[in-house]
Picture 1 (spheres, helix red, strand yellow):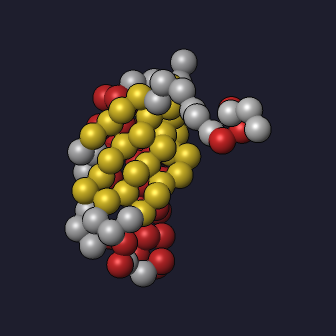
Picture 2 (picture 1 turned 45 degrees about the vertical axis):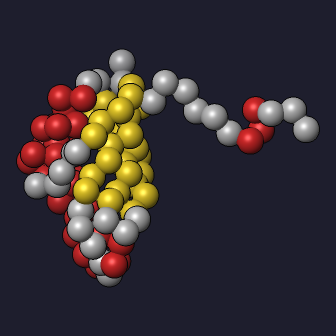
Picture 3 (picture 1 turned 60 degrees about the horizontal axis):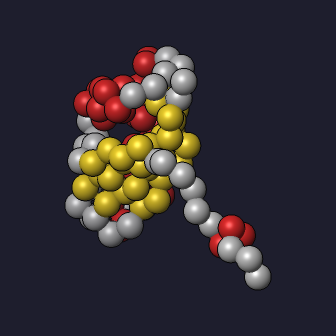
Length: 92
């Protein structure tokens, strides 16, 4: 069973990188994901000044760590998502 995780990556200056650089990082990440198979999937990432917050589905955090190691990107913190909260949950 795949669980949802949020990964915090500390990458100095990533928020100032041009889209071409981000595409290169995404390409490398996708190559490694293909190598690792169906146990880990990248959904999307939020890029801010010096960090990215990535949302993944994975069997376990070790697959995320292996992906980070092979792709050459940090995985400084990995947290399993326990639930999702949104505005529509509250009555009007």
